[in-house]
Amino acid sequence: MNSSRLTLFIFLAFVMGILFGWLCPTYAIKMQFFADVFLRMVKMIIAPLIFATLVVGIAGHGDLKSLGKIGLKTLIYFEIVTTIALVIGLGAANIFKPGVGFNIDLSTISLQAVEGMKSVHIDHSVSKMLLDAVPVSLFEAMADGNLLQIVVFAIFFAFAICAVGKKARPVLDFLQSVCEIMFKFTEFVMMFAPIGVFGAIAATIGKNGVSILMSYGKLIFVTYTALVIFVVSVLLVVCKIIKIPFFGMLKALKEPALLAFTTASSEAALPRAMEVMEKFGVPKNIVSFVMPTGYTFNLDGTTLYLTLATLFCAQIAGINLPLETQLMIMMTLMLTSKGIAGIPRVSLVVLTGTLTSFGLPVVGVAILLGIDQILDMGRTTINLIGNCVATTVVARWEREFDDEKMRKYIAKTPKKVEEKNNFDRIKLQSDTRRNYQTSEKDSSIV
Image 1 (spheres, rainbow, N blue to C red):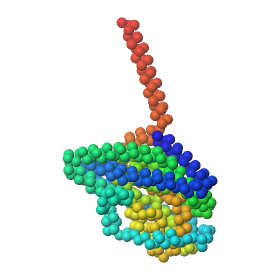
Image 2: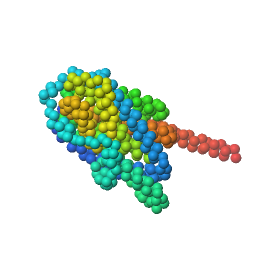
Image 3: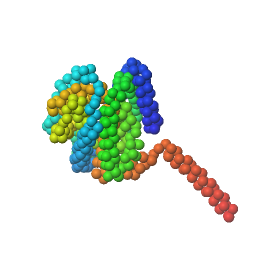
């Protein structure tokens, strides 16, 4: 199944899921099963794909010093962009004030789920972060889906292959074959994407109902408006600076972006996004390092949402936070939003901890629980696009971005390929006729 057809089927599944969830909510909730099966299928791809591509990218590249530069530049870019995202979230909350005039009866809100989140203790110290990045076992890291630990193991493994030299060549060739197999494996799994998308959307609408969109309308509008502002003012500008056509990239990413949006899962879109960015002109070693690392340190959509949600919770309670406190909250979230991607409902867990730290009521988190899936769809999509932009930034920074490959990939549409084939066929017929006529003329002269 080619990419354009798959994207069409995913979009149709999205529309059908909305209709089914609206018309048959009782049965639609049960469709979550198909979404869970699809996400499990994706998870079984990610670990071997990342490990193989990163090892081949580093060991095949052969320049170990460049990895240190890539890592440093990547982290610098991540920190700058996520800080801007926090500022935009803070500004959107102050301008639009989504929590002011919120008209849901707070007495009907259960705090049971939030109490469980309050009990989750996260150590945000640098030493703990570094300790958690080092895997006890590669197989345990793969089983837990800990991308950062897989990246760390793969880097050391690649270093060892380079140090051993020719004797390690069979291992490198084997992992190169694994890369090709896993990308083909990804194509097979993506055939089930429309079913997973249908299940995810149907269950979301069936559980929450269309009416929830009216109750939370202002919050949804402000969140998605802030995400769009971030895309236009940051990601678009960054692409302009590094001379990458942003809308051309979006066109290339339409399939993984639609997957991220409909399933609200970064993992669902990661394998396909990595494949697309490599075809887009970013070297394999940069894609396989930046993308997994970004899902730990560069969650643009999530960090933006955290500042917005924190002020939303304060506004619901009628608390007017001074600018100094808001800046302190932003600085806190700058640290607490890093390195915790593996925790379920991570954004709400971090939000609960932040509210508790600043003595703010956590009832807002219970309110957000009802709409979190719909908000997560938007922020997950921005997380994906932000990390894809990051790969192009690092590649351009390292002067390794392939502009010619990018232009060919953007221009490669079925219609244009068909037109080219028709042109080549007509040209071949014309050349054959001309050669025949020339041959006849030469014969007559003789």
